[in-house]
Amino acid sequence: MSLRYLTAGETHGPQLTAIIEGLPSNLELDFEALNFQLQRRQKGHGRGRRMQIEKDTAQIVGGVRHGRTTGAPVAVVVENNDWKHWTSVMNVEPIEGNDEAKRRVNRPRPGHADLNGGLKYNLKDLRNVLERSSARETAARVAVGAIARQLLEKFGIKVAGHVVSIGEVTAETPNLPLDELVRVTEQSPVRVADKAAEQRMIELIDRTKTEGDSIGGIVECIIEGVPVGLGSHVQWDRKLDGRIAQAVMSINAFKGVEIGLGFEAAHRPGSQVHDPIHYDGDRGFYRASNNAGGFEGGMTTGEPIVVRGVMKPIPTLYKPLASVDIDTKEPFTAQVERSDACAVPAASVVLEHVVAWEVAKAFLEKFGGDSIEEIEGNLENYLRQLADY
Ligand SMILES: Cc1cc2nc3c(=O)[nH]c(=O)nc-3n(C[C@H](O)[C@H](O)[C@H](O)COP(=O)(O)O)c2cc1C
Ligand SMILES: C=C(O[C@@H]1CC(C(=O)O)=C[C@@H](OP(=O)(O)O)[C@H]1O)C(=O)O
Image (cartoon, rainbow, N blue to C red):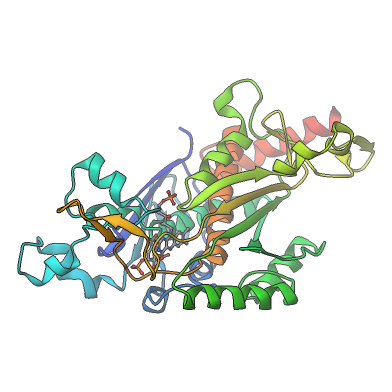
């Protein structure tokens, strides 16, 4: 059985729940590291008041004993602290005249899931759509991805992420070793290593917020230490770059994805795109450049995986756009719900974890076994085969 997960839960409900199936036994989990990733997702300049209410921590309520996976499904819960402020809104049906009716959503926000979800599911209170379409769900996905990340780390695979740009402000990306990039960007409120760009990004976010507007950006994830040959060229749905692209596009508000050079490849001749092949007795086959971002033929090349995602500006605007009241069909401005002005730094953490999940899944497809020890043996055999090639 391949690795899979589902999440459930509303943004203002009691909790988010995730069930992961297909993890091997004997994976030692570092709960502190898991919660550290959840807390990283909450940070970043431009987020709204909700992030001061939440202190995300994961409770593992199945599949783990004595700090190690047992091979059974792993169940993870992240509680919503905000639930206590929303119990009546969530539990009492809004009817004309009651307090809950004031929180009914009937003026869909352009750019959010409100109108499509209301029409599709025949829901007259668009809160029923909002509650699940909210990116609160990405807390559950980071919890799940953080477990996948620990599996990868067990085999020497490292994951990092950072912000490339916010609006028109682009950060210089210094050529730092991965650990150093992680350390430096972690201290930045906008997750960049470029101090001048950081300042301009902060000013841009503040200005945008004051104007009642929102702003998006570009985030990047890098994964190092991946062996050659994860994914496969033989079938469309086994191409790992394609699977990563789907995962990235599934993040709320992500509207584009690039691997390696990405869209820039369209502007260059082949001689300035493809990565020449070299061989060294110690390293084996390697590339001096990595324009391919770690993929050829849907398979990893052994070079770092480099994935970029584009986040559109947040849909909820404090100066709302034109909308239509779904009751009267009269023109109205869109509903204003509490909102972030910019969540690009947080989104970089989500990106890391959805990509880590896909890589872990492909890793288990290739080296899978029911226990960590069995996987270690399978990986060792494969590395020997590569060395003898
Ligand atoms: C970390 C994160 C935080 C977000 N915060 C908000 C927010 O506060 N307000 C909002 O309207 N949208 C927010 N979004 C974006 C919406 O969830 C998203 O636009 C919506 O679900 C519609 O989906 P789509 O943009 O992918 O079409 C956030 C997205 C992410 C990744
Ligand atoms: C709760 C989170 O993000 C939320 C994502 C979100 C949306 O519409 O996507 C809207 C806001 O919800 P609220 O109105 O409750 O503040 C964000 O805070 C989170 O990231 O944990």
